[in-house]
Structure formats: C-alpha cells, structure tokens
Length: 510
Picture 1: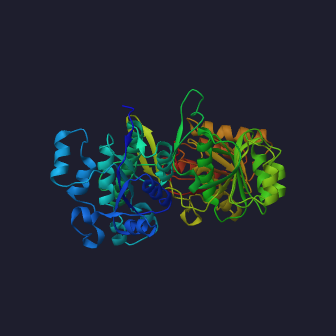
Picture 2: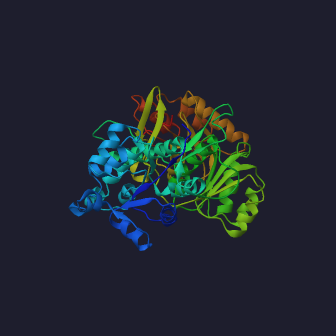
Picture 3: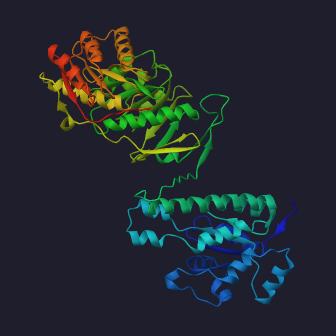
C-alpha cells in the first residue's frame, strides 16, 4: 500500500487564493492538467498558466448566478471512479469523463459571514454546495485522489508536491482525506448551529478545528488537549506553554474580571479557579497590593489579572511573587521588561472580545449545556429585607462581594470591606462551614471585620449564618432569599442592627 501514485490532473475551485500561486505553478511544472471554474480559473489564467474550464468538460456553463458550476456527472465521475475497477474505467471512456487525481477546494467563508453581522440572505449565499460536494467525493475516494480542503493546508500540500514530484502514497492521501472530513463536518455543524439558534432541534454539535496537545491533563498521568482558538482571545508575550490547569484558571480569571470591565483599577489573584485576593482602588499598584494582602499565602503560584494596564511600579511588586500567569489588557514597556525577568512566567494580553454565552461539560455518557450565569446583581435588583437600611458604602461593597461570590465555588461565603476581598469560604458542603472558614481565614490575615459585608451564593435556611456573621462584626448581608424561613434571618438582623438585602437571584457554581 506504500506504492506511490503519479497525479496527471487537478481540479481547483477555491474561495481564498492566498498561497495558491506556488501550487498552481508547481502543478504546471509537473505537467499536471488543471481544470477550474469562475474566479479561480481567471486567477490561474492571469498567471499565464494553461487551464481547462470545467464548462468545456461538462458542456454546461456556470448557471443560477454561480450556484451550479461543478455539480455534473463528468466532474464527479472523474473524481469518484475507481481506477483499478474495469467497469469504471470503461465508463470513463464511454462518457468521455476525464480522470481527476487532485481536488483543491477552499469553501465559502460561512462562519466569517455570520460573525460579520451580514444579512440572512448573504449568509445563506455563503453556504457552499459544490465545494463541500467536491471535498466529500475526493476524500471518499482517497485510494486514488488527493483532496486539499482548506487554505490552511496549501503549504503542506505544496511541500508534498516538491518532496515527491507530484506523487503521493496512500497514507498521504488518507491524511488529507481525514483533514477533509474534519473540514466538512465542522462546516455542516456551523450551518446547523446557525439554523438552530433558537434550540428548536435538541441536538448538540460543537466543533473546533484547532487542537493543541498539552504536556498532560489535570495530573501528570492524564493526557490533555485544548481545542479552541486561544490566539483569538490572547496575545502571548512571554513564558512557557500553558498547562491544562493554567487554562482552567485563566478561564476563571477572565470570566471574573469581566465583571469589572470598564471600572476603576481592579486586580485579582486566583488559585484553583477561585479568587484568593481581589481589590479595587484608584491605582493598579494599590489594587494589586491590597489584593495580595487578602491571602499572600495562597497567592504563591497563582494567576494574576488586572482590568487596566500594568505599569512598572506594579510590575516590580509582582516580580517579587512566584506566579504562573499575569493577564492584563496591556503592559507598559517597562513593566514588560521587568516581568520577563522570570523565563517561565506567562504574560498574556487579553483582547477585547465577547466571551462565549454557553457552558459545556461532560456528564455521564453525554454532555450538559447551559447558558452562562450572565446575571450580575445591580443596585436596582436589591430588595431591602430589614428595617435597617444599608449605607451607600455597604451597598457598594455588597455589589462588589456579589460579583466575587458569583465566580466562587459553591457553597460559598464572601467577606468584603472597602472593596477588598477579606476572605471567602469556597466549595464547602454547608454554608455554615463556608462562613466559618472565611471568618477564620480573614482573622488569620489580621482583617478587622467590623463593618464588613457578607455575600452568599444561595439563601439561608436558618438564622445561624447571620448570627455567626453578626458576632464577627459584619454589618450588612446580601443574599438571594427564597427560603420558606427567610423571616428567621430577617428577624435576627433586625434585632442586631444588621442590614440585609435580597437579590432574587441564586449564583450556584458547581
């Protein structure tokens, strides 16, 4: 099966001409007959290279405004025939069908057209019919035909032409066929998801063309791969390759900081997907300093993120800390040079793009899909539950705490004072445990909780949490409400001069 096969003819019909010229010239040098249509035919002819119009083969012009060009038995017969099948060979002769050994296609840019905000009619016109059919036919018949299905594969195919002088092995052709079916399945998935935007058909299709093998998964004995376009979100400036755990933490950091987009300088430090330090201040330097003070122990080896440019003064402080990743919308030139002082430290510029609106995770023998928790609690959402009215400072801190709470593992309690995360209880099996953990942690870092606020991701079924919080000095509470025993917590707060507001929105994060 390793016997090389010499190509004698090629059909080229592409949308993107970038990188096509050297392929066409090499095919011509190798004496390979070239068939083509429309704009591709003109492109080849303008290079001064002889090209046979497909219309000359089919005896039909391009019709219906270009919707039908290659859909003809003389084209598909030339691709799908079995060259070692006596009957197929006779039929090619009988119907004067030319043998086609290479098919080069680049599809209409359907996804880019959707992303551009084009009209529905323009989008529909970018659903490729002839091209996708050519790809499937050529890939199916990889035993005899080489299929190049994307502009991204032009260079690899050119290298193959140069290396083997127009000959290919069965393994070469099967590799390109695999790429082709990857392209065709992705293309069809994108079209289906466009038509199924209202989720009328309960079918899950997600496709990513770019995959990167990671050093390992969550642990060294596990394999890991990232599928997605990382470069669309970040510009990586420095550092080692990101690991599986790095990527999970980076995802958590970006989603958390998205809550503070456009606000005053805000800095967060994350560990194991949870914020261990977060503060908002007048300067990024002070925001970082106070975020670090929230938990300087957990910050070791953490993920750092800022919502504003990191300057030299802040970089000098960060440089004292061992951290895996630093993310910001930009770095000053001086800051960049400082932070590059550690060769493995990963520096990422976060681009201004919209994040996905859905979350997907494996579950049992299938997947769970849900809308992201896109609800951010705001002042207008708050319902005062107690006789005691919170101060403006407490209201500001409660909104701040709620944003952190939303992105912290449940069950969680978040304690905030003066827009600084004092501590949080994360991922506990009871809300009392989460509160106790957060209070003990805050005290261990010498925070004075008198006047602090408490945020909870879900309601209090009993008054025990507000009692513990009140005894610790907390003066205001924000929670969803909704327990049949809400009044017990409200009564305790009224009796002990604690303000409570309810949002009506639970923020579980499992």
